[in-house]
Amino acid sequence: MSDPAGVFEVMVFSEVLAASRDLIERAVADSFPLLVEADAQRRDDDLSPFARALSPFDQAVAKAPTVVEVFVGAEEAVDSLAKLLAREKPGRGVVKLKVPDGASEIEVQLPGRWAVTTETRQAIKAIPGVVHVEMV
Image 1 (tube, rainbow, N blue to C red):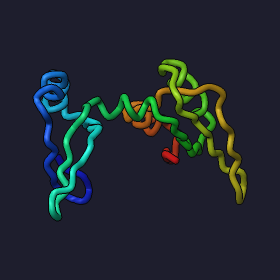
Image 2 (cartoon, helix red, strand yellow; image 1 turned 90 degrees about the vertical axis):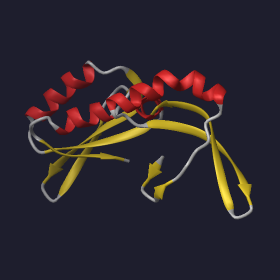
Image 3 (cartoon, rainbow, N blue to C red; image 1 turned 120 degrees about the horizontal axis):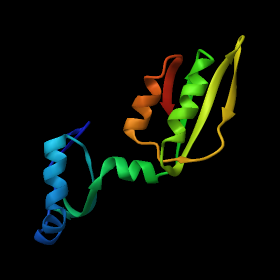
């Protein structure tokens, strides 16, 4: 496995591997990240992590409470954003609009909560008139 700090090994015992084999194969084939729930044991100066469970990272993100700030530069972006969110699954994510108002900005929290996945954020970024999308 790897993260921004480097590459490391995680022990996956046979029970976890058997339960997660299909998921691992799909993750490799489709290049999507996995969330590894792990415990660790210290041996001398080494830390040995071992997996307890694996799940698609986007599923975990969609279930987590998140706030997405959408900086809008054009009015038509608001209508497109509303249509996009109407197609999304319910979840725990909050979406806030940030609209410029002279030297300041107006913030509006949209009613509702959505499962905000990586794909959702990318779709929001692609809306004409959306200037910036930020996870808070």
